[in-house]
Image (cartoon, rainbow, N blue to C red; front, side, top):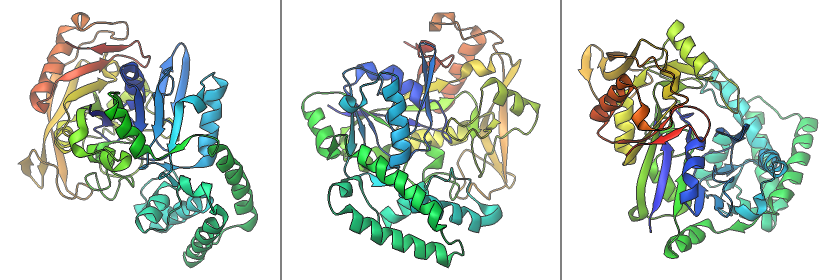
Amino acid sequence: MKVDVLLGLQWGDEGKGKVVDVLTPRYDVVARFQGGPNAGHTLEFEGQKYVLRSIPSGIFQPGSVNIIGSGVVLDPVLFVQEARELEKSGVPIKEILRISRKAHLILPTHRLLDAANEKAKGAGKIGTTGKGIGPTYTDKISRNGLRVGDLEADFDTKYAAARSRHLGMLEAMGCPADAAALEALEKDWMEAAAYLRSFPLIDSEYEINQALADGKKVLCEGAQGTMLDVDYGSYPFVTSSNTVTAGACTGLGVAPRKIGDVYGIFKAYCTRVGSGPFPTELFDETGKRIRDLGHEYGAVTGRERRCGWIDLVALRYAIMINGVTKLIMMKSDVLDDFPTVKACTAYKVDGKLTDRLPFDIATANIEPVYEELPGWQTPMTAIRSEEEFPEQFRAYIDFLEKHLGVPIAIVSVGPDRTQTIERH
């Protein structure tokens, strides 16, 4: 057996949660392989809306096993909030969810460091969610991190050392911690950590590989998007982890030869949250209209998402990096009323035409080159089969497949799990 991987191909917020929820009846195990509680995977079904931050999107499937993998960074306080909301909804979460001992912990002082780092950057700030994710990954790479497994033995000593180190860093940055505020944060954090320990803590690399050996089907779920990958995204305006397929190998302990299908998710247009380059961003009424029709506001932060036309240069790059075998197009219904739609097929960089992403997309002088297509101007939300697609929408799909070289296997025409159409 091989693991299948599902990940975003743009700047995140592509709709991964909904698709994982739709696909999970076919899988025995769903595992998150990277990222932190900034994920914001939104699922809607039976008139209810759920936002998952750290917990995998397969959590609503009875009988499944869901795993928070080693590549994830976990904040016990936010985890408790999320888990208890699911418990209130009747989800037997402690029977379904397992947590890797090797996942790193977001400490109270990591949040303080995150705020101090952003303040120090001034106008060049990254636009993080301020949840301490970057500093936690920094500690991980510098070999100073604390992991979930550390909660099982001598944690107080390890925490005291990390706390002292962080407070010294904050002093050096001119942002000393408020003692009373930190004490309150730590009280909540320790209570949450005790709740976290009540879940099965596992060596997830063994469990996932054993599941494969037993013939079980495993789906690996990524967070954020390819263009936010720390190595291959729009650096330095990126997240702190590897959001690409290779991140599933390192984040879950799965060998490269055990990767099967790679599902790449993208919107029929583009969005981005926070700072950083966005070649096809629209600053006019069209961009605002896409935002309003698509309800493009961060599931976790509530921030307005920047909106623009689809960028096929960046999308081809993401497909190449990830080895995508099947594409999934989200939110095509948002463009239902537009008489024409545009797609960026190339860039002009300093006046020269190219189909490649520049080394430094953050500073390159990029002018998008567009092709214009007729809109379908048909309400799509009630459609339940591809035979019902309007002719112009079929032409849009054909155009995208021609430029991307990978089939679009699934099309989403609305937020509910029933508004998901598989193509034959």
